[in-house]
Image 1 (tube, rainbow, N blue to C red):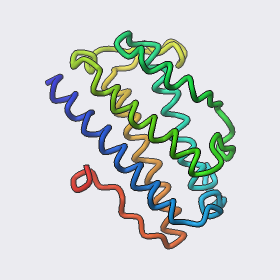
Image 2 (image 1 turned 180 degrees about the vertical axis):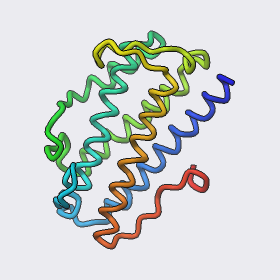
Image 3 (image 1 turned 180 degrees about the horizontal axis):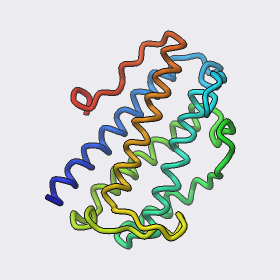
Image 4 (image 1 turned 30 degrees about the vertical axis):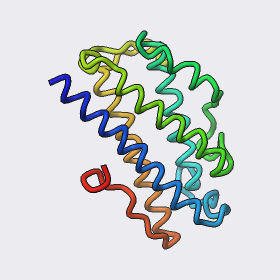
Length: 176
């Protein structure tokens, strides 16, 4: 059971990376001001949504690095990116080029995390000091991360639809 769980998360991490790269390639063909155009959504713009996802990933991966000894390689990487929690429409990365560099590195790191985690860890509790000493089931924590991506990539798709930009980039069965 635990080995199948690990296989599923490895697949989700690879799909996540691949889908993020497809979005970036699509966005690279657009005018830069369209990426920061405020649509009145919670995060304002396409780049605002993507900033939120990347910032959250850095915080969540930092939590993994602090909580699981076999993931000690995580902290030196995420600590290169001192991000702040900012109001929803304020950006840590103001252009796609800077965003892309870090997104690729964090996606690669997330893939390494799920591949490095021992199968038994997926069914273990995870104490996260950075979240107020809460305990999470490792499997649920990872599911939350990947679900968070799916949720917000849907928001990006809606904004791209409003711009009339074709964006069929997200399909786990055919693209995963």
